[in-house]
Amino acid sequence: MKKPYVILSAAMSVDGKIATHRGDSSFSDEEDWKRVHKLRSQVDAIMVGINTILRDDSKLTAKEGKSPLRVIVDSKARTPLNARVITVRPDLETIIAVTSKASKKNIDELQKKGAKILVSGDGEKVDLELLMEKLFDLGVRKLMLEGGGNLNWGMLSKGLVDELRIAISPVIVGGKEAVSLVEGEGFNRVSESVNLKLINNKKVGKCLVLTFKVLPKSERKKQ
Image (cartoon, rainbow, N blue to C red):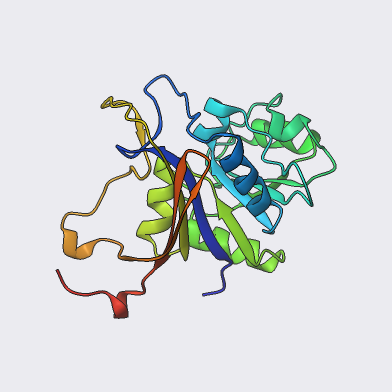
């Protein structure tokens, strides 16, 4: 299938949380944020899920260099009209991926605010494979995936992620309600899991940044 090269980027605690149970996701320090913003300037698009927008209200821009296309996976078109991804830098295109079941009223209001709507699927959730094809057709060749946990699961479980860059902050936050790097349904057996190959590790500020390639199924060893 046609798809962009997808880099999953995240900062997390040692115990694998990307946000506390109260939604705090401040794991990166200034040095690591510089790394993240540099990566943002090197990709064609940044993609997040609707829960990340509702929780963090991120602008999804790069502080230096070019800022990429912004993509929100938002099956029901729940993106607030006053979200910073809509109101800040209106010169940058924001794409909202929805399903055919999304509220037409919400879609109309978002379009009036300048958002581009991509209908990707007829089910309850956005068809991520179809979305990747549509983004590729729009010229997106390299995409930065910034979660959250459910979207990370959706992309990984469908084999749509090519690389992971994970910053591990030297903290433990705990909490069964805290958001993990990957959530969703999960695999039943380790043998079914996504296999990775570590290709780089380096210390950036207080964080340890690990870079992994996702191994194709043909290269995965049976557990």
